[in-house]
Structure formats: C-alpha cells, structure tokens
Image 1: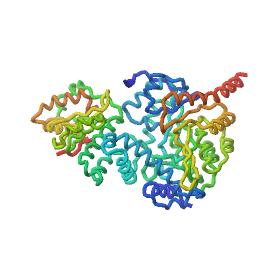
Image 2: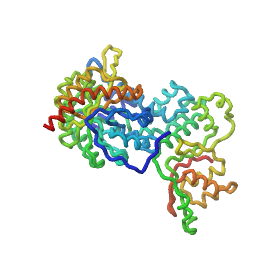
Image 3: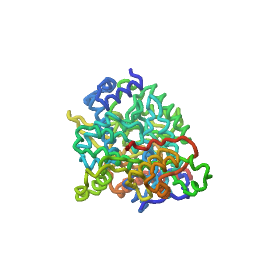
Length: 296
Length: 265
C-alpha cells in the first residue's frame, strides 16, 4: 500500500553532520516500513518533479528523516543558457519538499535543447568559469536557496583547459557564495584517470565551503589496448582507498554530512545501511571531538 | 581554441552521430579521444534506453531486450530528449516504431507503444484535485452552454486498430493463454487512460462515448460535446467521468484546446 499525503507538513530539517544514504525507488517501501538507522536521505530531484506515487512516498518519508535534493539535470555548464522551465520545476519541487540541502554538479548535459543524460566535463577555462558562475547565481536566485556544487568524475580532459579543476571549483564557491559537495570517490576516480594527486586536490578545497561529502563504489574498465579507466558507476561498495581518502577529507574539513550513493545493481537496503554505518565509524569520532572542542 | 558552445556542439555531434570533430579538443594519451568519448556515449545510451524501457514495458516484453535496445539506440540518436526529466521521454517513440521497418511484422506494436506511453504519462503527471460535480451544478443555468471542462493532467485518449489493451495486459502479466486468445481482427479500440488512487486505469469507450469524451477533453463546450453522443446517455457518461476524476476544473466561455485528443475518425 502506498502512503497517502496528509495536510500535516514536515518542517524543513537541516542535514546533520552524520551519515545518510541515497533514496532510490526500489527502497521507497522498505524505508517507509522499516525506518532504517540512517541519519538522513538524499533523492535525485529529477525523480520527484511530477505527481503520483513517488512524491507521496517522499512526503511520508520526510516526516521521519531530513532530506536533501540532489539535481542531475540542470546542466550548470551549458553555454547556451539554463533551461528555465526545468529550473522552475526544480523550484516547485524544493518548495514542496523543503530539503535541508540542494545540490548540483560542475558539468554540462544540455546543448541546443538536447539532454545527453550524462554529466559531461567542462573545459577548465575562464569562459566556462564565467558561464558556470552566472548559472549558479541564476539558480540560487530562482530557488532562493544556496546550492552545493559537486566535483564530477571524468574520463577525458580538454587540451585548452587552463585552470586545475580544484581551483575552478574553489573559484565558483568564492564568486557565487555556493558551497562545495566534495565527492571523495569522484576525486579518486578522476585522479586515477588523469594522473592527479588526490590528496592535493582535497587540500586545495576551501574547508569552510564544503557542505557535504559523497561516497560510492566505482569499477575499473580494461580497454582493448590494455589501458584502464576507472568508471564511476555507483554499483558496488566503497573501496578501501576511497575510505582512506575520506578519512583525510574529515581531517581537513571536520565533520560534514556524508552520503552513500548506489545507483546501479542496487542491493537490498541493509547493504546501504551497512555502508552508512562504516562511514559513521569514521565520521562520528570527528564530530564528537569537534563538539567537545566547541564546548571547551 | 573552441568556444564553450562550439565544444559542446561538437561533443553532441560525436555522441549522437559519431562525428569526430570533438576529438581534436581532447587530450589523447594511451587512451585516444574517441575511446574517452565512447564512455560518455555508452552511459548516455544506457541511461536513455533504461528510461525508455521503464516507460514502454509492454513493448520491451513483446520485442525482447535485444530488439528493444537496437531500436532504442536508433531512436535516441535521432531524437535525444528535449529536457532533463526522463519521465517525459519520449512520446515520439510510438511514431518511430510505427515507421520502423524491422517491426513491420508486429502491426499492433505502435498501438501498444501509444498505450505504454499514455500509462507512463499517467503515472508521472502532476497531481490535481478532481472537479467537484457540485461546483458545476451550482452554475447559473444561463452559463451551461458556455462551460468547458479541463481534463486531469494524467488523462490521455488512445485509439488503435488492434485490441492493444488486451495485448498490453496479457504481455505484462506474462499470460500466454490470454495472449493466444486475442483476436487481432476484432477491430479498433478506443481507450481512456488515467491515474487513479490505486494506479493507472485503462477504460474502453464505445464509439459514442469516445466522441463525447474526446470533445470534452479537447475543451469543447458541454452542449457541443454531449450532442455528439446522441445514441448514448451522454449526461450519465459525463457524471461517471466526474465521479472518476477525469476533470479537474471548468471554465466559462473561454477558448481551450488541450490537444490530448487523438484523431480517431
């Protein structure tokens, strides 16, 4: 049986500096029924733009959990402008669900009115920086909500890129006042694919701007010529190297809301809850230490 | 150095038409630029094929995964989505299948696709409260001739030359016996599709009910629509539609065309 909407509204609830999981359709019923021991939930905004069953589940679930809205289709890096009708639909969705955090990606997906259904990398140029900053400003104006921008995982670089990605991201945060969603797995994947130093990437991000961390699994694809690419498919557990990088991120950024993402080969809910528990084992001591330091 | 727009157009041409202009902008080392772009093309095709499979489950069952994926790949390259809400992708798929030569052996496939698409739209359409029949009854009788109804966003009308509702149900239930019992020559079906509290609902309409319902949904005035059903009890049909939440609002004397009526002469 699907839950019914009620007139009772849930309060806007801030996202705590604890571990949460990405909520996907196959887990709607299990989350509503079992209320798993995770601190918060994040949904893909684009999955809740319409009516029917999905938003009714979210209406019910958000009475028990703080919820964050993570966009995948706004295409902040589109040279020919934002899709205003899409942005306005996101605005209505945010008004309805009152998320504690709203986020999007440093990427592009739309050109000439065509949506390419993937998060494509931007050239790291002054022109792209201006365009992204303009679109972040526009988004924050329309949504009347500060957003976080996530670093993408990528499989290619452009010859004319002139700015390191970490500097580009920091500049967007500095110029627009947006926050940074630091995807630690994406840093690892991109660093492996492009020969970057993942620790140096982390060290270059401004700690005060980092408002959320993402963790996920990825796969390694061997190409015909024997070379390998790390593919960010969110289809497995977080690997030990990424857990280690996460521990580094917590040292640098302090306690930050942390999310486990899983989007392909989605396992039963208990596997996600267990991954969140593992994140909490690293995050909780950092938070408790920070709380004590503040109290002292 | 390309502008950002030039670069994005070149990548679009690469992903949809395998034009290799974009490769000149991309760092190549032990992995060449084309192989790097392939990763994105594969993700794009996989994501959009999944979106189509979710929206067209009966078509997927009828033709099988391999046929569906090859048809989807051609459709995606020709008609990528116009927006980032994949629930809306893509009403053009049924028209594509109607013209898709390898599917010619299944003359009912495009009709099943229209029904799949209508059910999918019904599932994701915005919520809207049903029109209270009392509000209509409270109207001044002088206005009755100028009332037009607004259909619920989940409502679609589908007509097909074959009994696609029976095919749709049998194939999704994997009911081979029901499938075998379908008479493909049974003539056209006219269907009202909408979302109800318990899920999507598909209702067969006879010819008179179809004429009335399509006029009502197209925003024709009440008398104009009801007159089209001289041989049926048109007021009773309207009352049933109101009880079932087919309409959400009315307007008095305002031109309206909701463009959901299919041409089914």
